Structure formats: C-alpha cells, structure tokens
Amino acid sequence: LNTALAIALFAAAAVAGAQDFPKLKAGLWEVTTATARSDAQAPRLTTMCLDDSVQQEMYKVSTGMMSGMCSKHDIKVTAGKVTTHANCDLGVTRMQSQSVMTLTGNSAYHTEAHATFDPPMNGMKESNTVIDGKHVGACKPGQQPGDMTLPGGNTINIRQMMGRKS
Picture (cartoon, one colour):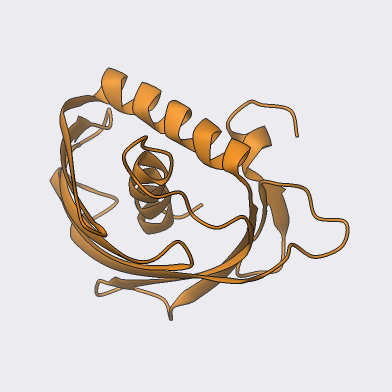
C-alpha cells in the first residue's frame, strides 16, 4: 500500500469503531482517495466488504498501533463530525497529522487529512489526502467481510493484513 493510503486507512480505521461514533452501514463500500502532492496519482478507488466485526477489529488494531507509536492521539466526536490530531513516530520520521471526517448518517463520509513528516519520508514533507466513502449495497457474492479490492484489481483481506483469520 502506498504511504497516503496507509495513513488514510490508519485514520479512518481509528474512528470507524469508536464506541461513541456511529457505526458505518454493513455491506459494500466504495472509497475514493485523492492525495495532493507533486507526485500524486489520480484519485484511487477501492471497495471493501464491511461488517460490524471488521470495524471493531480495525479499531482495536489501529488504537493498539497508535498507543505504541503516537505520543498524542486525540479524537473529538461532535454531531456527525470526527476530528483527530496525532503525533506519531514512524521509525524513519515523525508524523504530525490532523483529520476531519464528516459523516452523512451511516452510509457516507468525507475525510480531509493533512500530515507533515520530519524528516521527509521518501522525499515527502507533507501530504493532503481527501477520502470519500459511500455505501453502495450488499457485498458481492463470494466476498468475505474485510475483502478489499485495490485500484489495480487485486483483492486482499484487511483481517489477514491485521493478522486475523477471515
């Protein structure tokens, strides 16, 4: 996964399962990720088969990762809006990030995330990422919760990436 997508998933997963946060609707989600950088690619579309258990696992894994890597990770939830601020040590760099996720009920969201890297990571000093997610219906036949189809057409299972069994 590229850096911007990893950061975006990290931020989205952190809020997806929070107890005071509305759960996202189970089923198939389309997620478009666009990054504003000099070497940015066109917006990338991924799809994911999501259920409550996947949301909870993503939340547990991301908060565990953040507790070990981030000296600061604040989440503020107010009426359909989630704001996060984090300072994290990624080994080769320190990342400071801020994101605002605005929800439309449990069937769509829009996230704007900004991150800075000191020293730059792979030549990147900062990243601005916009993520739009929307529920598009039931998961496709044969899909398992956690199945994610990447822009190139490859399918991975987020549970397997997190070390869980599907």
